Structure formats: C-alpha cells, structure tokens
Amino acid sequence: MRGRTAVRRAIVSAAGVVALGAPAAPVAAAPTPTQSSNAFVEVTPNTAQAGSRVNIRASCDQANNNQATVESQAFNRVVVRPNNGFLTGAVTIPGNRAPGTFDVNLTCPNGNTAHTTLTVVNMSKPTQGPATGGGGTAGGFGGPMVLVGGLAVVVLGGGLWLMSARRRPETRL
Image 1 (tube, rainbow, N blue to C red):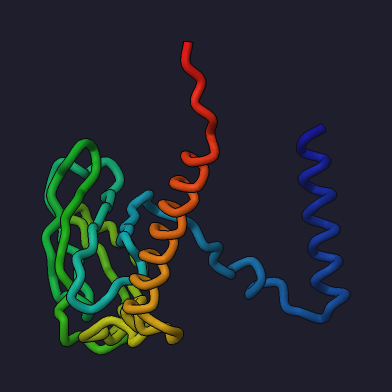
Image 2 (cartoon, rainbow, N blue to C red):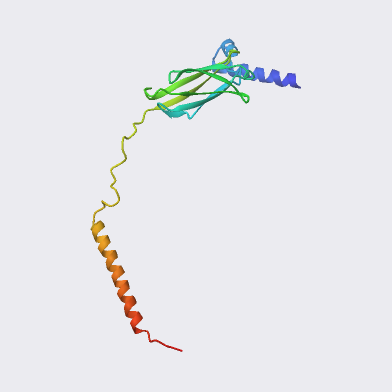
C-alpha cells in the first residue's frame, strides 16, 4: 500500500513538472535547508548604550564544557566560559562606539557557529537637570506672604479662644 502511494505521488509530481514546462533534473537536485546544530548566542540587553555592559549567553550544542569565542565590531572579541550548562560572559561596549546594529558571531571549538545582532545607541546624557524651577519660584506672593498669613491665622485663632473662654459661665459645685 505504501509503495503504491509513493508511486502515485511521484507520478503526480512528475506530471506537475511537465505541465509547468520545468525540467525535472534541477528540481530534484535542489538542496533543502537543514539545521545542523542547536548552537545559539544571546546578548542581553540586545539594545545597549555605548559604554554599558552586556551579558552573553551561548551554547555550542553538547559542547558547552569548552570555552568558545564571540566576536563583534561592537565590542571586538570575548571568550565565553562554561557556566551551569551554558557558555557565559560579559563585555563592556566602548563608550566611543558609533551607534548602529552590529553582528555578533559565536565560533565553537566543535565547528558550530551561531549569529545574532546587537544594537548600540549613543544617547547624550544631560549635564544638569531640566530647568523646571525650584518649587518656590512658581510666581505669586512667595515666602513673606505665607509667613504673614500663617501669623494672622494664629492670632485670629487665639482671639477666638479668648472670646469663647469669657462667655462660658462658671459653675461651681
């Protein structure tokens, strides 16, 4: 049963190729992409300020007991070392690195490779805080009027207390 199904599929495929007018040999010879390894490389954060430190975590697919090399124009070259089943490392992006997106490439001793990208930004840092005022510069009467107003409230409160104390009749037992 399986043989007949395979033959039918081959006949249908050949008929489709002939119907489209395409030669059969190049179609059969076309390579199919395959993933040969489970190697990977991660950079965190993947967008970083020039002058900041980034962490690298990688795997060389079952060969994580040997160190490997990670290279990029963003930070040149760093060696990642075995750590809890992965290869890890950290590197500081030079402060004068121009902004842009840079390739990050892992090269393993077993021949596996992996690729990711790192985006470097170079945002200027302010030298002083924004000019929003000091709180008391918001206009209006300012400090002396607040002091006079507070003093008036205290005097008024004292006067009301004295008046209410005079009106109370004294009762003695």
